[in-house]
Amino acid sequence: MADLDDIRDGDNFGLNTPADTSAFYLKGMNHTDWGIKNRMSRIFNRKSGRTVMLAFDHGFLMGPTSGLERIDINIAPLAEHADCLMGCRGSIRSCIPPENTKPICLRTDTGTTILTEMNHNVLLSEEQAISMNPAAMAAMISVGDAATEASTIANFSRLVDIGNKYSIPVMGVTAVGKDMARDARYFSLASRVCAENGASIVKTYYTEGFENVVACTPVPVVIAGGKKLPELEALELAYNAIQCGASGVDMGRNVFQSEAPLAMIKAVAGVVHDGLTPKEGFELYEEVKNSQG
Image 1 (cartoon, rainbow, N blue to C red):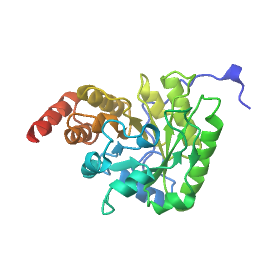
Image 2: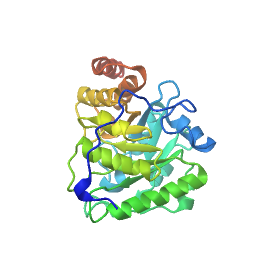
Image 3: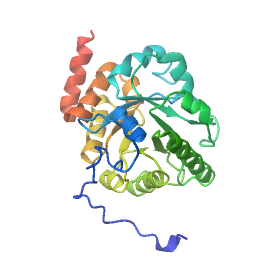
Image 4: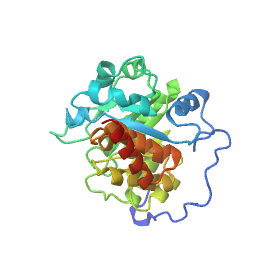
């Protein structure tokens, strides 16, 4: 059993020793089966090894938040410019054309909204999740929240069982516990818990010392965009995460709440896939924005 009096912070992250990717181009995937690798290769660009995921699952918590009033108008036209779409079954079925060929990361936990206590979630049924033909499935864990930590980790473990049954990757989404600081120590703990419970991808937040978060998580890490930032700051966020070893971004509000969402997702892709600096990315944003009239 863990002894809380003798938990020592890790200090040897092997930052100069990259993970072995000799059998597959993504970290931690050497020993997975064909189905997992095939689906991961649809999500992560095979040239850059990274992904730009477009998140629009906010509605199940927040309703028609700004930028998501009309998913058919605001999100569907951006789909072809993302590597992967992350949403809930209802909005995907009703608003994303079925001829869409972009992979789907299906949000599979649900149960509470911003009007009540958060994180008391349950999973969709196995049959419902599989019927959506997802390339990946996502669920949240709430590390540090005494009321919901155990149930959310149990949900996540159950989802990994389902994913392993059908060779579908599972993405662990790290929520911030009420009593936990948004620092590298917390996100390292939460991200590692996701990986230890079978995640193929971890979505977490960028923070100072993020290189340690990435190094101690043995599968690809993507960052959440979080609240809306000015465009240049959002591009700096993506750039800094990539420099620390992140395998991409899963951005929502920083794209669909932008003054020019199409220009923004193209600029983010330039930073993530093409190695653009934030300044170069912002120049691309302005160029595309101005070309739209």
